[in-house]
Length: 224
Ligand code: CDP
Ligand code: CDP
Image (cartoon, rainbow, N blue to C red):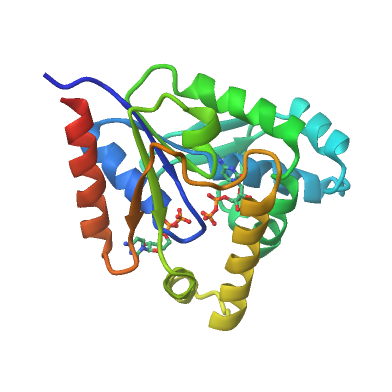
């Protein structure tokens, strides 16, 4: 007999969290929830409305006055901000380089955590982000902390960009990733940190298939 469990995947940028979570969710018939997309959507709105990103009050009020929804589709998860599909806009360089600033505010995070917790109540869920095992789903049956060297993570992002025809330099991507990791890990409000009961998975030398296998093996153990 297998039971439906909650799987939390945290870790730094480019570790492979969303790619692996998507594959595992499909294999298990689980719901995949990309929490980073929600912080990105809020950042997009803050930039569009020229909100002061360093103001906790302004950023929190902005979230209170926004609707952020994740909807499954055949092309993958779509992100809606106030009813408008912003799935591609939230991946822009401008959003990427500002999201950690927005994500640092404690009172805004409290609201996000509640929204995300409510999305997971039905069980059979895989959620990825930075604080899932520590703040959003502290009781998740399986917690993974996924990482890889910063060189490998930058190399992956560089390849992603090349495939999409976006020009970028490896060195600047590496710097951007390292800075975001630093900001995410050093903030006071639920920083990026491995939960005590999380399993560390290093994907530096694993390909996508091998990484997914590893997670599915751990999930199957917890489900039985
Ligand atoms: O996919 P990528 O690694 O580029 O990042 P993401 O998962 O889309 O998350 C973007 C940013 O949102 C992170 O760098 C964090 O600043 C923030 N974030 C967070 O603070 N907490 C989460 N649970 C998820 C994302
Ligand atoms: O969600 P996160 O930022 O942790 O990483 P991702 O967006 O899932 O993965 C970043 C890139 O690395 C994607 O292009 C993946 O296909 C690739 N990847 C890889 O080459 N090998 C792995 N073991 C995992 C991911």
